[in-house]
Image (cartoon, rainbow over all chains, first blue to last red; front, side):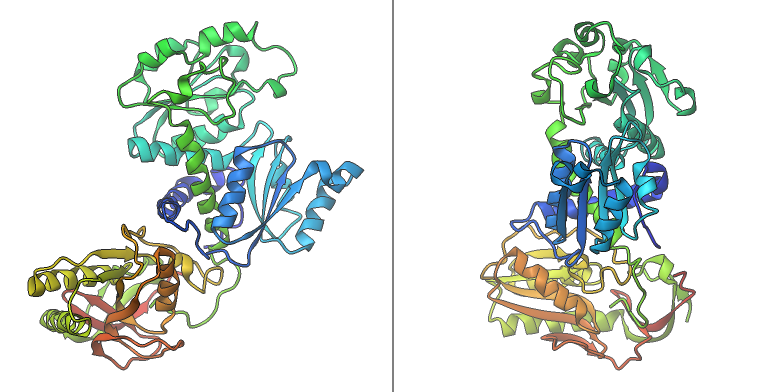
Length: 315
Length: 191
């Protein structure tokens, strides 16, 4: 089976998601070792192209590359020829000409990874494109939920906040539904995308009405950098209606999780001490980010899509 | 003999068609008893011994050897399992999918490690396993126990304990279970 890219969750489908989660159980074990490194992708080169700021995603892709013994190239926009006006296409073709096996790309415009895969032979991984998709975030969230609560099938997952601008919400909804969970989106109508009736989810603007039924409360970051006009009267009012406070956390089910993709606006979507709440798996999400990104890289570069040799036998 | 799904081989590689039986269940059981005694004799006891079964085919054999050793010496031997997929030399050439997560809850430094696998063929799995082993410590010695040595080695590797030597053709496949050992071929591969 030839797997070329991880652009969006739809490309993976249920079986692709399951394959990556299964690989993650292996890389979880690798990460518990005294030497948390395997030679699986020795000799492979992975370019990390981040046209947008990132802490977690970039560092975890870089850590994942190193733990697989691949070489990683960090491309930072600030010190590159992008500053001299080099186009995206020229940049990609230059990097490809150096012989990279995979390109991990984050870009502020939706759709860039799809465009980019036409210009390169390398495997492309979408690390977030505009407000469109962020598939590896969805995969690590699925893995975190499965590790803490078991299979996602039948779980009720509530995603709260700025759905409209959130690539995390789009990818996560697809992945959660693919694995059989039901999803409720919560937020003010101004922050709800217009086409949610096609998503296969429920929506509400009353947070308190769904807390007690949820297995997971997934709090989204208020994306202040993507909001050109004011979608909420004030952040204080938003925090009061849709922020996860101690009081709201107390009305959650006994076996349930608080999640957040980071970075947090403490005091806005989540009150300041919730990260340390016993139900919070936020740090767990970060740790699983490295594991799942190892799986994503191995899924593509270890898939044997290069050449087939004759006479290979199993034993 | 009937076709069967070979549990150790992914389904897309086809159906296992058995041509002949090399060992029956009693043969496998007796070979394991002999190998248990040989391991004991060779190492003059069990004090530093660790058995490491290679996923998938070596794990049940390692567990069986440990049971035997407990019965003979009244002493528990730790059993680890190792999936060598991430250490193979054919990653990127074909699809290399790990099967079950490695379980090695002890340090191997200064231990005598007996690698256990069902079939020794090219030796490449064992090469990968030796690379993996040193990530878990520096063993005093590494030994190799296999139920079937089928020849066709591509690396300078030899077993210390063998159930049976079987001459085979390269395209044949050996299937080892506790019910016996079958020699056959794979048919209808979907690759």
